[in-house]
Amino acid sequence: MRNKTYPDGMSKTDSAAALAPEGLMLPVPGVDYGLLDGLLGYALRRAQNALYVDFHRATAAWDVSPQRFAALVLIARNPGLRQGLLGQAMGLHRSGALRLTDWLTAQGWAERRDAPDDARAWGLHLTAAGKRRLAKLEAAVAAHDRALLAGLGEQGPALKAALDRLAWVATAQSTTPQNKPRRQTP
Amino acid sequence: MRNKTYPDGMSKTDSAAALAPEGLMLPVPGVDYGLLDGLLGYALRRAQNALYVDFHRATAAWDVSPQRFAALVLIARNPGLRQGLLGQAMGLHRSGALRLTDWLTAQGWAERRDAPDDARAWGLHLTAAGKRRLAKLEAAVAAHDRALLAGLGEQGPALKAALDRLAWVATAQSTTPQNKPRRQTP
DNA sequence: TATTGTTATACTCTATAACTATA
DNA sequence: TATAGTTATAGAGTATAACAATA
Image (cartoon, rainbow over all chains, first blue to last red; front, side, top):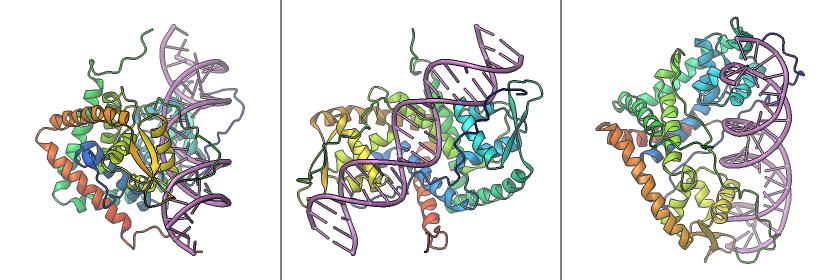
Protein backbone atom coordinates (compact mmCIF):
# COMPACT_ATOMS: atom_id res chain seq x y z
CA MET A 1 0.00 0.00 0.00
CA ARG A 2 2.70 2.35 -1.00
CA ASN A 3 1.55 5.21 -3.13
CA LYS A 4 -2.16 5.60 -3.39
CA THR A 5 -3.46 8.89 -4.63
CA TYR A 6 -6.77 9.14 -2.82
CA PRO A 7 -7.94 12.38 -1.27
CA ASP A 8 -7.06 12.53 2.40
CA GLY A 9 -10.61 11.50 3.44
CA MET A 10 -10.38 10.43 7.07
CA SER A 11 -13.64 8.69 7.68
CA LYS A 12 -16.34 9.87 10.02
CA THR A 13 -16.29 6.93 12.40
CA ASP A 14 -14.04 8.71 14.84
CA SER A 15 -16.54 9.49 17.57
CA ALA A 16 -15.69 7.62 20.74
CA ALA A 17 -18.27 6.75 23.37
CA ALA A 18 -19.42 3.36 22.15
CA LEU A 19 -22.90 3.25 23.64
CA ALA A 20 -24.30 0.10 25.10
CA PRO A 21 -26.41 -1.14 22.20
CA GLU A 22 -28.93 -3.03 24.27
CA GLY A 23 -30.45 -2.79 27.67
CA LEU A 24 -30.60 -5.69 30.06
CA MET A 25 -33.10 -8.31 28.98
CA LEU A 26 -34.71 -9.14 32.30
CA PRO A 27 -37.49 -11.70 32.56
CA VAL A 28 -40.66 -9.73 33.26
CA PRO A 29 -42.83 -11.24 35.99
CA GLY A 30 -46.30 -12.08 34.80
CA VAL A 31 -45.27 -12.44 31.18
CA ASP A 32 -45.53 -15.90 29.66
CA TYR A 33 -42.52 -16.65 27.47
CA GLY A 34 -44.02 -19.77 25.94
CA LEU A 35 -41.67 -21.65 23.65
CA LEU A 36 -38.85 -19.24 24.29
CA ASP A 37 -38.07 -20.53 27.77
CA GLY A 38 -37.27 -23.92 26.35
CA LEU A 39 -35.16 -22.87 23.38
CA LEU A 40 -31.43 -23.24 23.39
CA GLY A 41 -31.22 -20.30 21.03
CA TYR A 42 -33.13 -18.00 23.35
CA ALA A 43 -31.09 -19.06 26.37
CA LEU A 44 -28.01 -18.23 24.36
CA ARG A 45 -29.35 -14.82 23.47
CA ARG A 46 -30.22 -14.03 27.07
CA ALA A 47 -26.79 -15.12 28.25
CA GLN A 48 -25.04 -13.11 25.57
CA ASN A 49 -27.08 -10.04 26.36
CA ALA A 50 -26.20 -10.27 30.04
CA LEU A 51 -22.54 -10.83 29.27
CA TYR A 52 -22.48 -7.90 26.88
CA VAL A 53 -23.79 -5.57 29.51
CA ASP A 54 -21.38 -6.93 32.10
CA PHE A 55 -18.40 -6.71 29.74
CA HIS A 56 -19.28 -3.10 29.19
CA ARG A 57 -19.31 -2.47 32.91
CA ALA A 58 -16.05 -4.28 33.55
CA THR A 59 -14.19 -2.42 30.81
CA ALA A 60 -15.85 0.99 31.01
CA ALA A 61 -12.50 2.70 31.55
CA TRP A 62 -11.35 1.73 28.06
CA ASP A 63 -14.50 2.35 26.09
CA VAL A 64 -13.89 -0.62 23.81
CA SER A 65 -16.66 -2.93 22.64
CA PRO A 66 -16.22 -6.71 22.76
CA GLN A 67 -15.72 -6.71 19.02
CA ARG A 68 -13.04 -4.08 19.09
CA PHE A 69 -11.36 -5.90 21.93
CA ALA A 70 -11.26 -9.05 19.81
CA ALA A 71 -9.73 -7.10 16.95
CA LEU A 72 -7.02 -5.73 19.25
CA VAL A 73 -6.09 -9.19 20.47
CA LEU A 74 -5.94 -10.52 16.93
CA ILE A 75 -3.67 -7.70 15.80
CA ALA A 76 -1.47 -8.06 18.87
CA ARG A 77 -0.98 -11.77 18.37
CA ASN A 78 -0.58 -11.53 14.60
CA PRO A 79 1.54 -8.47 13.85
CA GLY A 80 1.20 -7.43 10.25
CA LEU A 81 -2.27 -8.95 9.95
CA ARG A 82 -4.07 -7.85 6.77
CA GLN A 83 -7.29 -5.88 7.08
CA GLY A 84 -9.07 -8.45 4.99
CA LEU A 85 -7.99 -11.35 7.16
CA LEU A 86 -9.06 -9.46 10.24
CA GLY A 87 -12.49 -9.02 8.72
CA GLN A 88 -12.69 -12.67 7.75
CA ALA A 89 -11.82 -13.80 11.26
CA MET A 90 -14.58 -11.62 12.63
CA GLY A 91 -17.27 -12.38 10.06
CA LEU A 92 -17.11 -8.89 8.59
CA HIS A 93 -17.25 -7.56 5.07
CA ARG A 94 -14.16 -5.75 3.76
CA SER A 95 -15.84 -2.43 4.30
CA GLY A 96 -16.58 -3.33 7.89
CA ALA A 97 -12.98 -4.24 8.51
CA LEU A 98 -12.06 -0.84 7.11
CA ARG A 99 -14.32 1.04 9.51
CA LEU A 100 -13.08 -1.04 12.40
CA THR A 101 -9.45 -0.34 11.48
CA ASP A 102 -10.21 3.35 11.01
CA TRP A 103 -11.53 3.49 14.55
CA LEU A 104 -8.58 1.60 16.02
CA THR A 105 -6.08 3.88 14.32
CA ALA A 106 -7.99 7.07 15.09
CA GLN A 107 -8.00 6.12 18.77
CA GLY A 108 -4.29 5.44 18.74
CA TRP A 109 -4.58 1.72 19.39
CA ALA A 110 -3.18 0.50 16.09
CA GLU A 111 -1.53 1.68 12.89
CA ARG A 112 -1.35 0.69 9.25
CA ARG A 113 2.07 -0.08 7.84
CA ASP A 114 3.06 -1.17 4.37
CA ALA A 115 2.84 -4.89 3.86
CA PRO A 116 6.30 -6.01 2.77
CA ASP A 117 5.17 -8.58 0.21
CA ASP A 118 2.06 -7.01 -1.33
CA ALA A 119 1.81 -3.36 -2.24
CA ARG A 120 -1.99 -3.51 -2.25
CA ALA A 121 -2.28 -4.46 1.38
CA TRP A 122 -1.68 -3.00 4.78
CA GLY A 123 -0.09 -4.80 7.67
CA LEU A 124 -1.77 -3.92 10.94
CA HIS A 125 0.25 -3.36 14.10
CA LEU A 126 -0.47 -2.12 17.58
CA THR A 127 1.14 1.16 18.53
CA ALA A 128 3.44 1.26 21.54
CA ALA A 129 0.70 2.93 23.54
CA GLY A 130 -1.77 0.37 22.25
CA LYS A 131 0.38 -2.47 23.53
CA ARG A 132 0.61 -0.92 26.97
CA ARG A 133 -3.11 -0.25 27.16
CA LEU A 134 -4.02 -3.68 25.84
CA ALA A 135 -1.99 -5.42 28.52
CA LYS A 136 -4.18 -3.87 31.18
CA LEU A 137 -7.37 -4.32 29.22
CA GLU A 138 -6.63 -7.98 28.66
CA ALA A 139 -6.10 -8.42 32.37
CA ALA A 140 -9.45 -6.80 33.09
CA VAL A 141 -11.23 -8.97 30.54
CA ALA A 142 -9.57 -12.11 31.83
CA ALA A 143 -10.59 -11.24 35.37
CA HIS A 144 -14.13 -10.58 34.23
CA ASP A 145 -14.24 -13.94 32.52
CA ARG A 146 -12.83 -15.74 35.55
CA ALA A 147 -15.50 -14.15 37.72
CA LEU A 148 -18.17 -15.55 35.46
CA LEU A 149 -16.58 -18.97 35.50
CA ALA A 150 -16.37 -18.84 39.26
CA GLY A 151 -20.06 -17.99 39.43
CA LEU A 152 -20.81 -21.10 37.41
CA GLY A 153 -18.98 -23.37 39.77
CA GLU A 154 -18.30 -26.84 38.50
CA GLN A 155 -20.52 -26.30 35.45
CA GLY A 156 -18.09 -23.74 34.07
CA PRO A 157 -15.56 -25.74 32.09
CA ALA A 158 -18.27 -27.99 30.68
CA LEU A 159 -20.16 -24.95 29.49
CA LYS A 160 -17.15 -23.65 27.63
CA ALA A 161 -16.66 -26.99 25.91
CA ALA A 162 -20.33 -27.26 25.03
CA LEU A 163 -20.35 -23.76 23.55
CA ASP A 164 -17.39 -24.54 21.35
CA ARG A 165 -19.18 -27.62 20.15
CA LEU A 166 -22.44 -25.74 19.62
CA ALA A 167 -20.74 -23.21 17.36
CA TRP A 168 -19.38 -26.12 15.40
CA VAL A 169 -22.73 -27.89 15.14
CA ALA A 170 -24.61 -24.81 14.03
CA THR A 171 -21.93 -23.97 11.49
CA ALA A 172 -22.07 -27.48 10.13
CA GLN A 173 -25.84 -27.23 9.69
CA SER A 174 -25.56 -23.94 7.88
CA THR A 175 -22.91 -25.19 5.52
CA THR A 176 -24.31 -28.63 4.80
CA PRO A 177 -24.86 -28.61 1.00
CA GLN A 178 -28.60 -29.39 1.03
CA ASN A 179 -29.15 -26.75 3.67
CA LYS A 180 -27.13 -24.00 2.09
CA PRO A 181 -29.39 -21.16 1.03
CA ARG A 182 -29.09 -21.09 -2.71
CA ARG A 183 -27.45 -17.99 -4.01
CA GLN A 184 -28.99 -16.32 -7.03
CA THR A 185 -28.29 -18.68 -9.94
CA PRO A 186 -28.40 -16.43 -12.97
CA MET B 1 -55.48 4.69 23.09
CA ARG B 2 -58.81 5.92 21.88
CA ASN B 3 -58.72 9.25 20.17
CA LYS B 4 -55.30 10.63 19.54
CA THR B 5 -55.06 13.44 17.05
CA TYR B 6 -51.68 12.79 15.50
CA PRO B 7 -51.15 13.04 11.76
CA ASP B 8 -51.58 9.68 10.07
CA GLY B 9 -47.80 9.15 9.91
CA MET B 10 -47.17 5.52 9.15
CA SER B 11 -43.52 5.10 9.96
CA LYS B 12 -40.81 4.37 7.46
CA THR B 13 -39.74 1.02 8.87
CA ASP B 14 -41.92 -0.91 6.48
CA SER B 15 -39.34 -2.39 4.16
CA ALA B 16 -39.14 -6.13 4.58
CA ALA B 17 -36.13 -8.26 3.62
CA ALA B 18 -34.29 -8.38 6.92
CA LEU B 19 -30.74 -9.02 5.78
CA ALA B 20 -28.40 -11.27 7.68
CA PRO B 21 -26.57 -8.74 9.85
CA GLU B 22 -23.36 -10.70 10.22
CA GLY B 23 -21.46 -13.24 8.23
CA LEU B 24 -20.23 -16.51 9.61
CA MET B 25 -17.35 -16.09 12.04
CA LEU B 26 -15.13 -18.96 10.97
CA PRO B 27 -11.81 -19.61 12.66
CA VAL B 28 -9.15 -18.61 10.15
CA PRO B 29 -6.30 -21.09 9.84
CA GLY B 30 -2.95 -19.57 10.59
CA VAL B 31 -4.39 -16.82 12.76
CA ASP B 32 -3.51 -16.90 16.45
CA TYR B 33 -6.53 -16.05 18.58
CA GLY B 34 -4.57 -15.66 21.80
CA LEU B 35 -6.69 -15.02 24.85
CA LEU B 36 -9.88 -15.23 22.87
CA ASP B 37 -9.82 -19.00 22.50
CA GLY B 38 -9.96 -19.37 26.26
CA LEU B 39 -12.68 -16.85 27.02
CA LEU B 40 -16.17 -17.91 27.91
CA GLY B 41 -17.42 -14.66 26.46
CA TYR B 42 -15.80 -15.25 23.10
CA ALA B 43 -17.07 -18.82 22.92
CA LEU B 44 -20.53 -17.44 23.59
CA ARG B 45 -20.18 -14.90 20.82
CA ARG B 46 -19.02 -17.51 18.35
CA ALA B 47 -21.87 -19.82 19.26
CA GLN B 48 -24.41 -17.05 19.02
CA ASN B 49 -23.10 -15.95 15.65
CA ALA B 50 -23.33 -19.48 14.28
CA LEU B 51 -26.83 -19.91 15.68
CA TYR B 52 -27.93 -16.61 14.24
CA VAL B 53 -26.84 -17.59 10.77
CA ASP B 54 -28.45 -21.00 11.11
CA PHE B 55 -31.72 -19.55 12.45
CA HIS B 56 -31.80 -17.35 9.41
CA ARG B 57 -31.37 -20.31 7.13
CA ALA B 58 -33.98 -22.41 8.91
CA THR B 59 -36.62 -19.68 8.82
CA ALA B 60 -35.80 -18.00 5.52
CA ALA B 61 -39.34 -18.57 4.23
CA TRP B 62 -40.77 -16.23 6.88
CA ASP B 63 -38.21 -13.46 6.80
CA VAL B 64 -38.42 -12.88 10.54
CA SER B 65 -35.39 -12.15 12.69
CA PRO B 66 -34.88 -13.95 16.00
CA GLN B 67 -35.91 -10.81 17.80
CA ARG B 68 -39.12 -10.43 15.87
CA PHE B 69 -39.84 -14.09 16.39
CA ALA B 70 -39.49 -13.59 20.12
CA ALA B 71 -41.89 -10.64 19.97
CA LEU B 72 -44.44 -12.74 18.11
CA VAL B 73 -44.31 -15.50 20.69
CA LEU B 74 -44.68 -13.01 23.52
CA ILE B 75 -47.71 -11.40 21.91
CA ALA B 76 -49.23 -14.78 21.10
CA ARG B 77 -48.88 -16.02 24.66
CA ASN B 78 -49.91 -12.74 26.27
CA PRO B 79 -52.80 -11.33 24.25
CA GLY B 80 -53.32 -7.66 24.95
CA LEU B 81 -49.64 -7.18 25.90
CA ARG B 82 -48.67 -3.49 26.16
CA GLN B 83 -46.02 -2.10 23.83
CA GLY B 84 -44.02 -0.94 26.81
CA LEU B 85 -44.01 -4.33 28.47
CA LEU B 86 -42.96 -5.96 25.22
CA GLY B 87 -40.02 -3.59 25.06
CA GLN B 88 -39.11 -4.25 28.67
CA ALA B 89 -39.12 -7.99 28.16
CA MET B 90 -36.79 -7.58 25.21
CA GLY B 91 -34.44 -4.99 26.67
CA LEU B 92 -35.68 -2.27 24.32
CA HIS B 93 -36.41 1.38 24.77
CA ARG B 94 -40.01 2.53 24.27
CA SER B 95 -39.13 3.89 20.86
CA GLY B 96 -37.63 0.56 19.89
CA ALA B 97 -40.78 -1.26 20.91
CA LEU B 98 -42.69 1.17 18.75
CA ARG B 99 -40.62 0.44 15.65
CA LEU B 100 -40.86 -3.28 16.30
CA THR B 101 -44.64 -3.08 16.66
CA ASP B 102 -44.88 -0.93 13.54
CA TRP B 103 -43.10 -3.61 11.58
CA LEU B 104 -45.23 -6.43 12.96
CA THR B 105 -48.44 -4.61 12.14
CA ALA B 106 -47.25 -3.46 8.71
CA GLN B 107 -46.45 -7.07 7.83
CA GLY B 108 -49.84 -8.26 9.00
CA TRP B 109 -48.55 -10.33 11.90
CA ALA B 110 -50.11 -8.30 14.69
CA GLU B 111 -52.49 -5.45 15.38
CA ARG B 112 -52.99 -2.74 17.95
CA ARG B 113 -56.29 -2.70 19.79
CA ASP B 114 -57.49 -0.38 22.49
CA ALA B 115 -56.43 -1.45 25.95
CA PRO B 116 -59.63 -1.83 27.94
CA ASP B 117 -58.31 -0.42 31.20
CA ASP B 118 -55.97 2.36 30.10
CA ALA B 119 -56.77 4.75 27.30
CA ARG B 120 -53.13 5.68 26.87
CA ALA B 121 -52.05 2.19 25.96
CA TRP B 122 -52.46 -0.33 23.19
CA GLY B 123 -53.09 -3.99 23.66
CA LEU B 124 -51.19 -6.04 21.13
CA HIS B 125 -52.78 -9.07 19.47
CA LEU B 126 -51.86 -11.39 16.66
CA THR B 127 -54.04 -11.23 13.60
CA ALA B 128 -55.81 -14.38 12.46
CA ALA B 129 -53.27 -14.75 9.67
CA GLY B 130 -50.49 -14.09 12.16
CA LYS B 131 -51.66 -16.94 14.35
CA ARG B 132 -51.74 -19.34 11.43
CA ARG B 133 -48.30 -18.32 10.23
CA LEU B 134 -46.81 -18.38 13.70
CA ALA B 135 -47.94 -21.95 14.28
CA LYS B 136 -45.81 -23.07 11.36
CA LEU B 137 -42.95 -20.78 12.19
CA GLU B 138 -42.84 -22.02 15.77
CA ALA B 139 -42.71 -25.58 14.49
CA ALA B 140 -39.77 -24.69 12.26
CA VAL B 141 -37.93 -22.96 15.07
CA ALA B 142 -38.57 -25.82 17.48
CA ALA B 143 -37.27 -28.30 14.92
CA HIS B 144 -34.21 -26.14 14.35
CA ASP B 145 -33.55 -26.07 18.08
CA ARG B 146 -34.03 -29.81 18.43
CA ALA B 147 -31.52 -30.40 15.65
CA LEU B 148 -28.97 -28.37 17.55
CA LEU B 149 -29.67 -30.25 20.76
CA ALA B 150 -29.34 -33.52 18.93
CA GLY B 151 -25.97 -32.42 17.58
CA LEU B 152 -24.81 -31.78 21.11
CA GLY B 153 -25.68 -35.25 22.29
CA GLU B 154 -25.68 -35.77 26.01
CA GLN B 155 -24.13 -32.35 26.63
CA GLY B 156 -27.27 -30.63 25.37
CA PRO B 157 -29.53 -30.40 28.43
CA ALA B 158 -26.59 -29.44 30.66
CA LEU B 159 -25.67 -26.65 28.26
CA LYS B 160 -29.15 -25.21 28.42
CA ALA B 161 -29.08 -25.22 32.21
CA ALA B 162 -25.61 -23.68 32.32
CA LEU B 163 -26.65 -20.91 29.93
CA ASP B 164 -29.64 -20.03 32.06
CA ARG B 165 -27.34 -19.85 35.04
CA LEU B 166 -24.75 -17.81 33.18
CA ALA B 167 -27.32 -15.18 32.26
CA TRP B 168 -28.23 -15.01 35.90
CA VAL B 169 -24.62 -14.74 37.09
CA ALA B 170 -23.72 -12.00 34.63
CA THR B 171 -26.87 -10.08 35.46
CA ALA B 172 -26.10 -10.35 39.15
CA GLN B 173 -22.60 -8.97 38.59
CA SER B 174 -23.91 -6.05 36.59
CA THR B 175 -26.51 -5.16 39.16
CA THR B 176 -24.44 -5.62 42.30
CA PRO B 177 -24.51 -2.16 43.94
CA GLN B 178 -20.74 -1.61 44.08
CA ASN B 179 -20.41 -2.66 40.45
CA LYS B 180 -23.23 -0.59 39.08
CA PRO B 181 -21.86 2.06 36.73
CA ARG B 182 -22.67 5.33 38.44
CA ARG B 183 -25.02 7.47 36.52
CA GLN B 184 -24.13 11.09 36.05
CA THR B 185 -24.50 12.69 39.47
CA PRO B 186 -25.01 16.38 38.68
C1' DT C 1 -46.53 14.76 38.40
C1' DA C 2 -45.81 10.18 36.25
C1' DT C 3 -46.70 7.04 32.53
C1' DT C 4 -47.81 5.38 27.59
C1' DG C 5 -46.99 6.02 23.24
C1' DT C 6 -45.39 9.12 19.30
C1' DT C 7 -42.35 12.03 16.58
C1' DA C 8 -38.01 13.71 15.06
C1' DT C 9 -33.43 12.98 14.92
C1' DA C 10 -28.82 11.00 15.40
C1' DC C 11 -25.45 7.42 15.87
C1' DT C 12 -23.65 2.70 15.23
C1' DC C 13 -23.08 -1.36 12.69
C1' DT C 14 -23.22 -3.70 8.54
C1' DA C 15 -23.91 -4.36 3.61
C1' DT C 16 -23.77 -3.40 -1.61
C1' DA C 17 -21.73 -1.39 -5.58
C1' DA C 18 -18.45 1.11 -8.09
C1' DC C 19 -13.87 2.48 -7.97
C1' DT C 20 -8.21 2.60 -7.74
C1' DA C 21 -4.14 0.26 -7.42
C1' DT C 22 -1.70 -3.81 -7.67
C1' DA C 23 -1.00 -8.93 -8.54
C1' DT D 1 -8.94 -11.21 -14.58
C1' DA D 2 -8.67 -11.43 -9.58
C1' DT D 3 -7.60 -9.38 -5.12
C1' DA D 4 -6.86 -5.56 -1.29
C1' DG D 5 -8.49 -1.69 0.11
C1' DT D 6 -11.41 2.60 -0.42
C1' DT D 7 -15.43 5.51 -1.21
C1' DA D 8 -20.23 6.53 -1.26
C1' DT D 9 -24.47 5.25 0.11
C1' DA D 10 -28.28 2.72 2.16
C1' DG D 11 -30.63 -0.07 5.50
C1' DA D 12 -31.49 -1.93 10.09
C1' DG D 13 -31.26 -1.34 14.99
C1' DT D 14 -31.09 1.45 18.87
C1' DA D 15 -30.90 5.70 21.56
C1' DT D 16 -32.19 10.55 23.26
C1' DA D 17 -35.26 14.38 23.70
C1' DA D 18 -39.45 16.84 23.37
C1' DC D 19 -44.22 16.21 22.93
C1' DA D 20 -49.57 14.79 23.51
C1' DA D 21 -52.85 12.28 25.91
C1' DT D 22 -54.12 10.14 29.89
C1' DA D 23 -53.57 8.47 34.76
